[in-house]
Length: 363
Image (tube, rainbow, N blue to C red; front, side):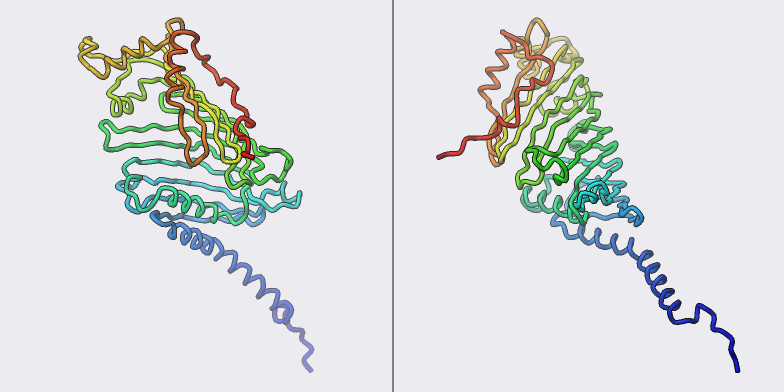
């Protein structure tokens, strides 16, 4: 009689466990490819655009996946410069919110770029609003659960016009942004529960800053933001000003300050540019020979504050989001106010509050 025991691996219960482990291993090995194919299918279905991701990495122990080498561009683009380029994107479960009973995600983006190439965007394949809605919805579809926390590290946003001579490249680089509580996991009773902070460096080595709060839960988000661009070397803008206004600066500093509030779809705010210590470039020293540049130079002198040597205006912006209009005559009036009475202060005015955007309802 043979009483020799079977090896443990030949016992049925161990074979079942082994089969399950092998199946899990196969699923784990194939899952990144499955997710990659899904993401590429989403990008391929955006009307008027094409895109791709290079690789997907999984980190199951922390409930995360990393999308590497994602880009998006228009189908009829004249260049191969990606409209959106996201080299590394870490998407994970926000565990602190999970403890509060809410399943939401957090995203960290490293070195993302948004490059608006003028020539590419002129090749229309449909209405602008439809296209924007299509690609923004597609990007949110890539994230399976709502985004509650967003971080951007060393990003870049740029406007580029290649047919201009020389090429125009207006940009903000070294862009860092943090937005928290986007899905109202905490502080649910606040009207604007989500703080937003951003900073960066603009063309001309200007200092870019944004701070404020938003509410993304509403269909038209409520917003209370202020932003500024300070100490821009205006000569860095010469390619742009020469192309669009035939103006060249030999020196000068540009500051821009703004406050924006949106409540129930109604916007109120202002944009305040200030140009100081500026001189227009003139090679042959005959300023009025260039009619347009001479015209601009004349009004620059007449309309600047002689005490601070600053040319400034303040453009009010008010209206519903379907028809936001700047107050033209008010802007002209404020140019003269700055020139002859009192220069605008070189700071954010702190005069726009979120409540200012609320409008009285008709009875």
